[in-house]
Image (cartoon, rainbow, N blue to C red; front, side, top):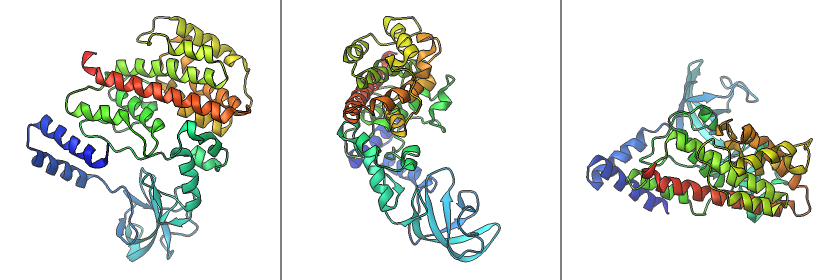
Amino acid sequence: MTDDRARKKAIRAYAAEHGVSYNVARRALERTDRRQPKSEFTIGETVRVNGRRIVADHYAEVDPYTAREFCIHIAGIVEAAWARWAGPCDLQGGRAEIIALKCAYCMARTSVRCCDIAFCEKHRDQHQGIEHTAPEAGRYVAAFKVSSIVLDNRYGPHLARLPGISYPKDLTLEMASRARRGDAVRVIHHVRKEVAVPGTPDPIQEALLDVGSGDSAIPTPTRARWLATDILARCSWPAMAEALGDHDTAQWMRAQPPIVDATPTPLTERIYTLDRDIFGIGRVPNRTPVGELASANALSDLWAIAPNSVAHGALGYSGGVGDEVFSHALTLPDGPARVGKAVARAQHDAVDAIVTVIRDGRRH
């Protein structure tokens, strides 16, 4: 769906929800957009550096209060720039002119953006090799060639907050370690970020846009917790088995019924057995950054939500097990290609599961 079509659908959803005309809804959303806090710098503009929303970086090579040129950033987000004072300044700040954007990974000056983040050309190419390349299309081959800072601090495509969805202030999975409101949005947003590749379809967005029009519904926090658990058990763990060449186990796990409560099942008991011997490969002494990337792409980070009552707590170790399994699998002769296919299958199945739950949300 193009941005224009998505915008029109959002306007229609807002109009239906509030019982107003299309034009009234459009103007209301435009006012909402204007109230949003500043999220990016523009070269040549003048901004007020006040130490609150826009902050001068003291760790720059020079003191910003005496320097001719210095770095500033927007608090709470990845957005920084090189600036110079455009008038008097003191310890309370002052007005500064943006002279260049600053790369998210280094101090280089740039005017290049990708995924709404400023990069120098070198780091933009490395970023695109990871985030703009599908797992099965050579992502992990590219990952071996990038610097560690790119793997440790990933900036995927910017996912705008969709109308009709009540987003929690903190979208991190850590906030879902205890059941609370917004957990479903956290789970869905996390999966959507991990599977997003610019220029490819986004079925989860399509399903979420239907929520605003009342055709679908966000699952409850309890339902979301079991959804995350089921994705771990029937998407992430089969991907680990597939990466190690155990296709029979992977197919068997995917074919099992969904996990909807803490009742022991053959699938959860099998996961407990696999976890105890790490699929028969033993403990991997050195987890690699690329292995950790593949584990995250396979959605193993959802372990933070899995209840300890499932699989004797084994699902709670999915992140560490995934790091070790994929680190080992990537050392095999056809490792990057095999891991790419396994991760792609896990993501496809997870997206299908989430879309199904959203579409059927009115039934739960």
